[in-house]
Every structure is written in structure tokens, then in C-alpha cells.
Image (cartoon, rainbow, N blue to C red; front, side):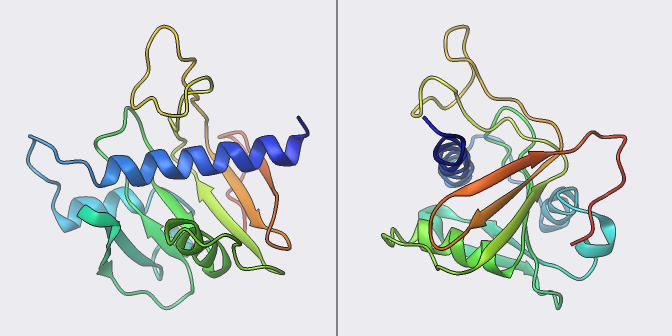
Length: 172
């Protein structure tokens, strides 16, 4: 399987896991909006986060705006239902790509590249079982350090890149 197809599948599985987990009910007390905002702001550099829109997924997949921003970036907080960090930052084009995916559109917006980042890292999904909801001894759970993703590219494919924690923050 070629790298772009593999990366596209990884991004879709990771996104599905974040979304599915975000809408699951929990017995624990829900985080406050302030806690959700603080969590979301870990997804990208502070210079981007300070003017970004921050949304949270609610039951049924509906997005609730926690804070309106002005710079075209949208942040989602960590989902406490998942086994590790997964806060995410998306540029305008990546946000359109995510909405197309969540809306089950057959083709995401074409001709646009979208930037996504997860600078707190991610514990996204199983590398062997796309329906797994938590790590086990047999499902090779994917754990990534700080990373970014490029989605879109003529409505298909994507690239994935990582950076070491010691490297400077990327400029969006």
C-alpha cells in the first residue's frame, strides 16, 4: 500500500476515534468550558491559539462554539474518553475537510490543502483494529508525539509529518 493511501487511512481512523469518543457519555463530571479551552490551546503554538475559534463536540456530533476567534483556525480540546491527548488545531481548509468527512460527503473540498496539528501528541487509534476504542495487548495502539497533518490535495490523499519536541514551533 502506498504512503499517501496509508496516511489518509490513518487520518480518517484518528479523526473517527476523536469524534466517536467525543460523543460518548461519561460517568465523570464533564470538563468546564474553561478546561476545554485550556486543553484545546495545547494543539498549536500560543500565537495561533490566542485568536482561534474553539469548538467542542457534543452528543450527536454537533459542534458547540466555546470561543469565537478571528484568525481562521479552529481548535478542538482533548477528549477525556480517549486514552491520551488528542487536542487538535485545524486551519480553514482542514476544517472544511473535517466537516465534509463528518457530513459523510463522498468527496472532500478539492483543490485546497488543509493544515492540522496535534502538538500535545495523540493516542489516536489501533493500528490493527479500526473499531477498537482503547488500547489492549493485541491491538498495537498508535501513540504519536507532536505532529501535523496536511489534508485535502485535490480532494484526495494527504501527507503526514512529525517534528521533535525540541524543534521550534511551526509557523502557520
